[in-house]
Length: 332
Image (tube, rainbow, N blue to C red; front, side, top):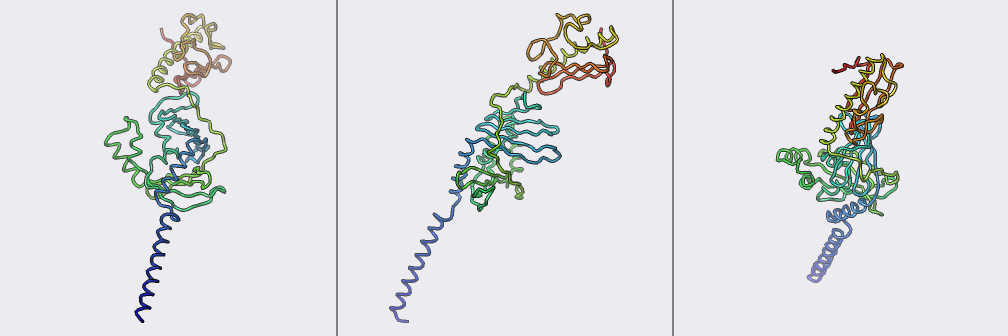
């Protein structure tokens, strides 16, 4: 090969190499999204989701009804109607947490907000790092980009209340969360997260689809009190309910049957109306209702038996049924 051809070949080779290098650089910078692009997309989608109302529901092992999670800006609620050894309702408003048995009266408990954290895609997206694109998928007719990211354990620990932090607890959480990740399916058009999954270190984790159509019902100002105060007043309600129970017992001894109703007038011959107990929560006279500090009284079998229930803030504080427990032992 002549020197001229060699030089020409080298020039062509150099030009081809330069073109290939330019193409690969263009692909890397423009066509192939990198981790920074994934971080930006996730950040944008979380900003969109923060202003929306949405919900989802999922199956619960041993539950007859699905668990339902509802979200509005700044608030979230979890409903587990068949919850055993746990609360049926959990509510988070900002960093404040609440639990309830009936969804009406709430107990203020720190761990409730923490419990809601991993059910909330808005929170999950805030404690991940090194996001990367993991493909695309059509979800319910929406074209989505999939973003996957490992959980940032340090970021999660910083969100916990001081009462949850100790060297031992932190180490335990680090071990449990090591290798866990979150995946988000983000609509390519409106940037909302339409599906997410929390995955264990071995990659297990079922996708959860978000529902933006069903109205979300999350109270903004729940009727609540601290757990210690609710327990103290509940014990006082039991003391006052015992006064009524003793009056019922005396009435039975005197008349041979239980009173048809329970109020200051019907048991006036065994309990001075001036001594009628007050509701421990409201200071109003106790009455026949399901409100905290009140009672429910039912006469059974034509007066041969009766049932008395005294309500606390979030549970039944005292219960008596003469047929089940026998005669009332009247004190001196």
